[in-house]
Structures are given as C-alpha cells and as structure tokens.
Image (cartoon, rainbow over all chains, first blue to last red; front, side, top):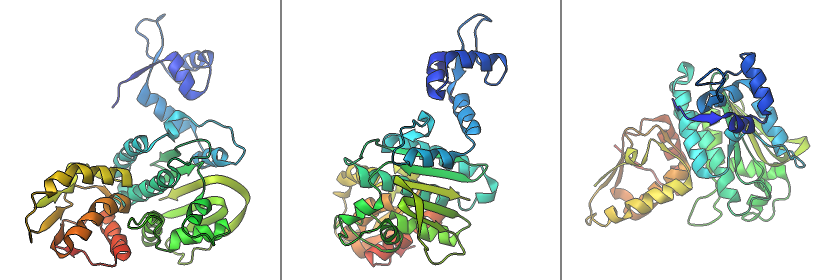
Length: 245
Length: 96
C-alpha cells in the first residue's frame, strides 16, 4: 500500500474539482481527508484518491470514447493516462497483480494481462515520433467488473499499415489485415503481429474484445470465427479497445 | 548456458523492454562455446508477450537455432506467445 500523501491542491488538480468542493466532500464524508489537527491542513492518501476515481468513473469505455473523438479536447484523469511506455509498463504490472486476485480468472489472468500489454504496445510502437497531437494512451480497468479499456489518439491502423501495404484504402480493410495477416513492416523485425496474438487469445478463452479504429469496429469472442468488421457512424482518432472477461 | 527469464522481470512486455533486456544480456552471450546449448527457463514468469519475446527469443532462435531449448513453458501467456512466434518464424521451438 502506497502511503504517499497529497496536498488538497494536488488532489483538486488530479480530480479536476475545486478546493472548496474537496472541503465540502470532506465534511459530508464523501471523500475524507487526513488532518494532524482539527484545524490543520488537509491531506489525502494517493491510493485512496486512485480508488475514488476508479469507483466514481462509472463508464470507463464512455470516457475513453469521448477522448478519442476527433474534435475532442477533454482531459482524462492522470490516473488513466500513460504518457509513455514506462508508465504503461508499471501500470500493467499493477493490473497483473489486481487480476491475480480475481478467482474466476485464476488460470487465464496472465493471458488477459498479455493482450492488454500487446494492445498498449501497439499504440506506442506505431506512433513513436508520429503522435498527431496527444502522445500516450488511456489505460483503465475495473478488475471486479471484468473490464479493461485502452485507447490512443494516434494515427490509427489504416495510416500505419499503409506504410507497408500501400493499397489499403479503408479503415475496415486495415482492421481486417491487422487482426488477420502476419506482416512485417521493418524486416527482419516482425512488428505488427501483436493484434493477431490478441485475436488468438480472445478466440480461445472466455474473453470478449471490442476494437475500433477510424470508422471501423469489430467484436471478437469465442463463438465468432469471422472478424465481421463493421462500419460505424462515429469516426474516432486512433484506436479504442474494450476487453471484457 | 541457462538464461532465467524471471531475472528480467515477471511481466515481460513490449519491444522496447525486450530490446533493452537483450542488449543488457548480450555481453554474457560472448561466453557461449561452440555447440553449447542455450536453455531458456521461463520458471517464475507471469506475463509474457510476443513483442518482448520477438526481440529476445527471436535473436536467440536466429543465432542458435537447434541449440536453443525452452524450459518450464506451462504458463498460458508463454504458450500463446510461443505459438504465434512459431507461426511468424515458421519454426518449431525445441521445448523440454
């Protein structure tokens, strides 16, 4: 358990509320602070603030979807934002620990961690040095509800794959290739095969994956052999993934 | 030579970290004698991804071919990652 204490100003900044709101929440026992004296400064445990955000963000997928909308200017809570792969790696280890405590996925939690890792890696590997505006990824989860959400505001799969398959013209086709074909963008490296791994793992276990890039979306689960990529009305920047287990 | 992957961590993820792990280990590979077996032991690894594996195992497979032996591969993420790497490399790993 991390015992790092945050000041009321830092906490307000993380939660995106005012200091006055935090004082009000404290009085109402909605979010209690730590005070050395009754009239002293308020402090908050970092761990408790993280839990508060997780429990009070009812729709993680909805938040990620709003963030990836093309014209979006919304800011996501820092707890869900991994600006670089080192931060993502640290949080992925934390996810692994959380999932290891969920009994019903005892046998497959390393696989769930691995597919979350590959989807996140994909975002970083394919956008390094080429992020259109916001670098990094959205990464949030609720281990009890069995939900992991990953998203990026990167170039999207079509633009990335066009570099190695110039004849690709639609997001749907690009999504199909990404989940289907073994390809290499920078021989002798086999970059770009992470999503095939994700597909295999989802198809062989009780896991559901919803993945969108641009205006193309797919859903994979154990019962679906075909990818069935559909066109969506909304168009997002980058990629958006929901893993259910 | 035996390489214990858990010495690189229990969550082996991402190309970048796979590359760094290999670069850090490279000087030890200089001690490998001609015809010596390279045993990779997965004991203690919890999460293993193809991207990390491609950077490290890909190199070993290419360099040592039949002399590369994999051990303690029961973990499901190890199994699934080895399966896709075999498909990509078009080889069958020597698993003991």
